[in-house]
Every structure is written in C-alpha cells, then in structure tokens.
Picture 1: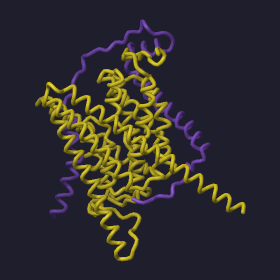
Picture 2: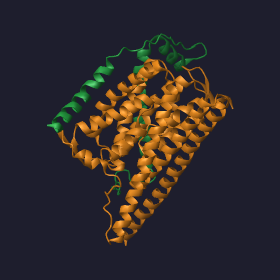
Picture 3: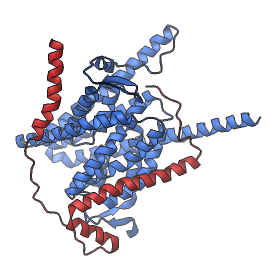
Picture 4: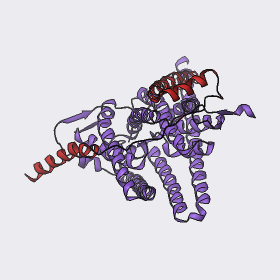
Length: 356
Length: 96
C-alpha cells in the first residue's frame, strides 16, 4: 500500500494521505456548522498522522483559511455573514492577538507556561460550557412560562440577555449592524474582539471557540449570523496565521491542499446543515464540543502532573478529541441527509400541487 | 461625571494598552530550516527549492494558493450540491 503514503516535500516525513482527506472532511463539517477553524482537533490529528508538532500547528493554521473561506461563501448566500461587523472586529482581534502573544512571552520568562496556559484553557472552556447550558435552560424556562400563559415565545427570545445591558452603553460613534440586527457603540465589538483575540493569542488558538459564544452572548448576534461572521474572521486571521507560520518555515502546503479537498465538501455540508438545525440546537451541541475539548485538556494536564503516565493520558486525550470529531461529524451529516431528504420531498409535493 | 470619567478611561485603555504591549521587543528566531531536495523531482523539487531559497516567497505563494484553491473547490462543491436539489440560496429558520 505504498501509494497511500507520500513524502511531504518540506517536513520530509511519509504521510498516509487518505487520513488527511478524512481529517479535512471532519474539520470542514464541524467548522462550517459551528463557525470554528478547528485548531483544537486538527493539530493532534496531524501529529498522529506523523507531522512534527511545529509543522502540525503551522499546517493547521495554514489550512484553516481555505475551509473557512468556503463556509463563509456558503453562509453569505444564506445571509448569515455581517461583513461590517466582521471587519470592525478584525481591528480588535489583531490587536488582541498580538497582546496575547506578548503575555505568552511574559509567562515564558516566569516558566511553567504550558501548565498555566492549559489551566487557563480549562477554566475558560468550563465558563463557556456553563454559559451555553445556563442560557439553554433559561430559554426552556421562558418557553414553559409562555406556554402556561397561553402565548408562544418570540422566536428571537434568548435565555441570557447580557447583550441588552451592553447595548445600553452608548459611547459614540453608535453604529447599526444590519445583518446581525445590532445597534450599539462601535467600541463594544472592538472591545469584545480585543478580549477574545487576547485569549486566542494566550491560548495559541484561532479564536472561534471563544469568539462564537462572545458574538452570541456579549454582542447579541443570532446564532446563524454568529457562525457566519465568525467564519469570515477565521478566514482572515487564518490567512494572517498562514503568512506568519509560512515565513517561519513551519507549514506544509501539500498537506494543507490535500486536507482542503476533503474540507471543501465537509464545509459545504456543515454550512448547509445549519439550515436544518434550530439555532438553540447549534448552541447546545457547541456546548458538548466545548466540554469534550475541556476534558481532553484536563487529561493533558494530568499527563504533566503524573509524569510516569504521560503517554497513557496523551493517548486518552487524542482518542477523546478524534472520537468527538467523528461523533459530531456523524451527527451533522445525519442532520444534513435528513434535512435534504425532507426538503426534496417538500419541493416535489409543491410541484405536484402546481401541476394538479 | 463618574460616567464620563469611566468612558474616557476605558477609551484610553483600549487605545493605549495594545500600543504599550506591542512596544516590547520581539524574540529572535535563530534556527535555520532546510529541506532535503535530493529525493524529489518535478514540482516537488521546485517547491522544496523555493522553501530553501526564500521563506518570504514561500509564504507569499502559500497565502495565494490556499484561498484560490478554496474558492475553486468550494465552487465545484456548490455545483454538486445544486445537482442534489438543495436550495442553496434560502433558509427558512431565522431564530436565535
């Protein structure tokens, strides 16, 4: 089965290329559905396939912009991308990302940077998961209360309403983001993106995992618009990351292109699947992904603490991440197939009625 | 007055904090990476040589090739999806 392995021109390692296509497909599906670049799943995946860690990180960031661009194009046609909001947030994201990188350099001088960063990551993910599930529970409560009083809950109602308080801060200039339906001070999205960019810089991730909930809970974006707008940002920051890592010589373009072949189909499936899943469904499954990610990092920390079991914990973390990617991809794929089948049946019924 | 002071200080913090942090010195990366081009032929050899000769050119080609291929593959996938009978222009759901 020699033809299934190819030597990467830059890293110089033989790689099982169908593994790259499958990984790209899974990342495309999950990224297109949740609005994430998927760095947390690609890096360990590439590392397992045989890439040295530095190349795994660089190639992951380089390939991120491709599927994100495809998903952004798709979400844009559904009206899910607020380009004005995305462009405004890029300012804060870039400044925040550089600030985060400076914090990392400061932490490096203190030492034990890995442990601090991983602990910070776990705390952050726990908070995000708690917020997501509290919000879903509060909305359910509102739904029950509305039903009991004989009304239907407004489709745009949310559980947590922090964004309403933040929208009341009217530091000029106040702007209106039409697609997202937000009317607020321009400093709010800049401040939020600066915060999320800093966190992304400190944690060494693309930022979708942090930015998506921030867009929903702090800015008040509808879930679908948050997914689309976040993907637009991931595409831009991915290009910046690709340039930076390529200049440092840590990317493998051939691997990124092979992954892109799988991701181009996966990203379309993930983006189209958002048509068939309600906004709150996306939020809850996002919460599940966040919990899985947090558990995998806890396992990594345990590996650092208990040095004699480092290999066992590392293996468990990798299995958990890849298992989570497979389960979520399968779930989204099922939703996509069922949704397409229903849509086609609905259309043929309509056509029959017209003919009749 | 307190409100105004808070607004002004938050505005200054937003503008000045990144500038202060960005003023810190950059670390130098002294490691030189070279790839072994002897085992490659054709475009692979050209690509590996480009990497060895100029990381800048290598970076420029990378950031051009990825989005261009993304757009081409995305458009092809679009065509396949349309052939499957999926409405790729409208979505009914618009709730939070």
